[in-house]
Amino acid sequence: MKKNILLPGAAIAAGAVGFALRKWELATAFEPDTGLAISGAPAAYVLAAWSALVVIALIFLCRGEKESLPYDQAFRAEGCSAYITASVLSGFLLLIGAGVEAMTYPVLIQTARAESGSGFSRLALVLPLLRILLCILGFLCVLLISANLYRGRGKGKEHLPLLGLCVLFCVWLISDYQSRAVDPVVLDYVYEIFAICASLLGLYEMATYSFQTGKPRRTIVLMLLGAYFSLVTLADRHSFADMTRYGFAILFLTAHAALLLGEHHAGEVPAETEAEPHA
Image 1 (cartoon, rainbow, N blue to C red):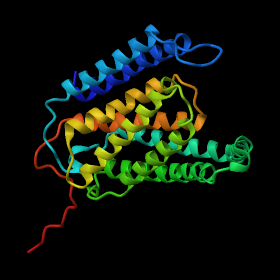
Image 2: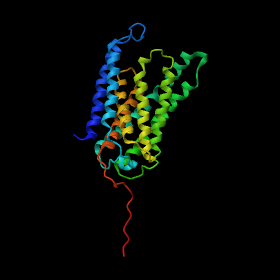
Image 3: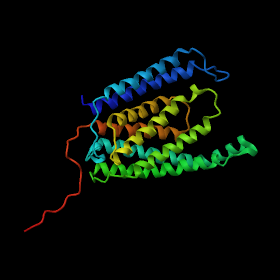
Image 4: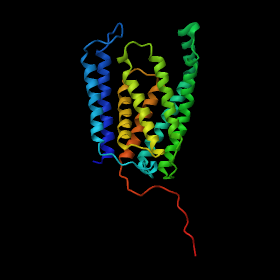
């Protein structure tokens, strides 16, 4: 089986196992009354060991990926229907998440005001709005990225839509930190932090190809780890908008990791063709 199918498939399968282990952990590793973590819970150690094993395995399996290619050649997907389906579907997940969050935005603001009282922070008002706008922008970015690769336009050099997705995940990370900073139980949210950080780094490494500094091994490992941890944290309680963003990370990162793991031929870089002069 080809590596571009086997490795992403293995990461998704590992994520499914991690999802089941996280469900076990949530059911047995926390006190029902207080929500505090139970010291020495087997599920917590098993999931941590499994995640460490996945990280080591991905690093080992990607050890041969050393050749750095131009963006349009590294992520070549011209005419690939499986790629365009997965990528566009991931974009629509962002758009759906933005719509749902926009509908719940007034309720969220009222809740934030009620919980904070006179100490209401403007950040609680700004961050959700930024997430909504950036998810809509992210949808447009995904369409531009997908169209460029699927149609072989060769316009990937310094492709700004890639950076738009990075900004979205940066804002999401800040939002998650704001809501989780007061939670004393780190085990309660550690895997969602891993998922957002790994996905952000995977998107960033993908963007480096557009600026001629791509590192194949690092990029593939971070992309697949973003997909793995996103699957694991889907076992947690999340808002519907957050679940769509994790779904986006799983589809988008896995699809582009598969492209990067595909066969590349030296010297074949998409470029605009010029008509030959006639005598």
